[in-house]
Structures are given as C-alpha cells and as structure tokens.
Image (tube, rainbow, N blue to C red; front, side, top):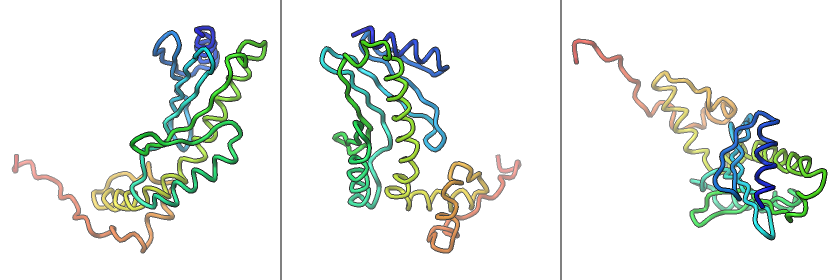
Length: 184
C-alpha cells in the first residue's frame, strides 16, 4: 500500500503542506487551520483499509457528560468520519476507506476531499470543545495573564466568556512587580 502513501506525499508537495513519513505505510500530514492552528492527520495504508486519524483535543477537565454528549451528537452528522476517545479519554477524529478508493483516476480528489473534511471538522469543533471541557481553566489563565500584564491574544476568541464579572478568578492573582536590578 505504499502507493497510497506516495499519493499522500505528492498531494502534500503539490499543496505546500508539511508531511512526515513514519514508515512505508504511514505518513502524517500537518494541515494549517484557523481555530485549531494545526491538525496532524495520520494516514496508514493497510491491505484492507486506509485509516485516517487526527488528534483533536485532550480529555476534558470538566463538564464531561455534556462534552461527550456533544461528540456523540456530532458523529451522526459527519458522514463517514467519527470522533473517538482513546484509553486516556483524549479525542480523535477518524475515517477509514477501502484501498480501492485510491486506485482510481480520481484518487487525489478523494484524498483532497477527506483531508479537507478533517481540517474543516477539526477547526469547527475546536472552540466548542474548549468551551465545553476547559472553560474554568481558560478563565483562570485569562485572569493570570491580565494580572501579569501578559498577552491574552491566544484567548481572544473567548474574551466574551472570560473577561466578564462571572470570571471568579479575576483579581485573585497578584500582579508581578518589576524586579529591581539591585536585587540580583
């Protein structure tokens, strides 16, 4: 099934996308996103299936029932792709296609469509999953960054949820005093 991995490498080269070769039967394509800055899609070509898998987000810190309910509800809308969890409850996006899908003249179109779907679903889902599973951690980080005068740019998409009066962590961190050169 090295032909599939060769196709993946050519596709990545043609589209200026980074690809890492893992073995003759596996490669990882690194897709640049907007909300999720990058999505690494592992593609493994076997005798009976070509499996795609992308890490989406680590296990949730909170709101586990609603978090996993949201994932299951999405699975019914993904048409051939599905969310899954590993033994640590980290979240992945998966798909599996028969090798024959890549033995036709339109094989590059099939690959392009699936990688596009992986990127789109990962990007659309990422912020929702962060809010569902990590809101308290994000509030704490926001308050800590504000207290230290640090940038909140990486959290700007969530400012409406983090900067208000309902952020119980604002004002709980002490501001950092500039260190006097004579203290060294």
